[in-house]
Image 1 (tube, one colour):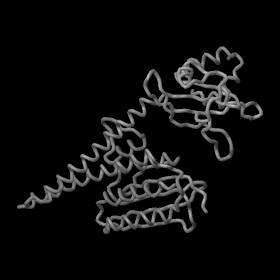
Image 2 (cartoon, one colour):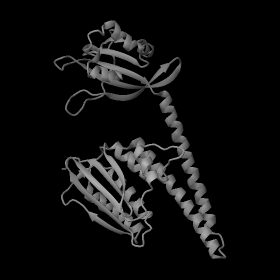
Image 3 (cartoon, rainbow, N blue to C red):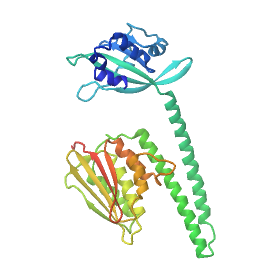
Image 4 (spheres, one colour):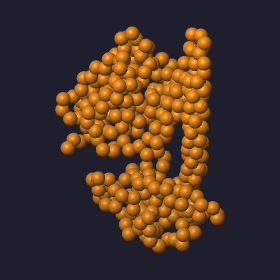
Length: 342
C-alpha cells in the first residue's frame, strides 16, 4: 500500500495499536523520501531518505518547503488530490530524477491540516524510456529507408514471366507493409507519450463520417454502412483515431467478393458505444485472446499494431473494447465516456 492510501484513509490513525513509534517506523522504512508539512508548508517531519535529498537543498525541520514541491494543483471541485511532477536532485554528486507526489492531510472536520510529500526515484525508469525511445526512432527510420530502397529496386526489376511478376508484387507488398508498420509504431509512441484522453471532445457522428470518407477513397470497392445519432454526441477526441484504425483494418483485410464494413454509434447512459462490423475473414481467435489479455507471449502474439493502438487508446480514455466473431467476419465494440456538449 502506498503512502497516499495511508493518508487518504487515515489508516495510521484508525488503528489504535499503531502508536506514534510504529507510524514513524512505517515512514522511515519506506524507500521513498517522505516529508510531512503543516498547513503553512513548514516541515514537521521527514524520513532519512528525504533528509538525504533535502539536506543537499538546505532544508530541515521547521523550514518552509517551497511551493515547487507542495503546490501541484487541485481538482475542479476544490478537493485535494495526488499530484505528480518530476524534479531533479543532486544525489552523491549525480543528478537523479524524482516523481513528487502530494497528498492532503485532513482532520475529522475535513479541514486540510497539512500535506505529505513523497519523493519517488524514477531515474532508472526515465533512462530506460529514453533509451527505448531512441532505439525505436532509429529502428523506424532505418526500416523506412531500407524498405523504400527494397521497393524501388523491386519496382525496377524486369519481369519475364507470371511467376516473376508475382514475386515482385509480393516483395513490394511486404516492403509497403513494413513501412506502414513503422509509421503506425510512430503514431502509437506519440500518442502514448503525449496523448490526452480528455482533449477537446468531438462529435461522434462527425468523426465517423470523416473517417469513412477517407477510408472510402482508399478502398473504393468496400461498401460502408453507417448508423449514427442524429443529435450531437460528444466523446473523447481519441475516438477518431480509434475508429480509423478499426475501419481501415476491417476494409484492408476483407477478402469477401462483396466487402462490407458497417459502423454504428449510439448513446448508452453516460457512454458512447461504437461498433465496427465487417464480413471479412475475422480476427483470429488467438489474436483476440492476446488483445483482451493485454500481453503477448512467445507462443501467442498479435500480428499488427493497429488493434494494439485501439486497445491502449481506449484504455487510456477510461473506456473498454471487446472483440467478437460475427457471422461471417468480426465485430469490435468500443465504449467511451460521453463528454459535455456546448
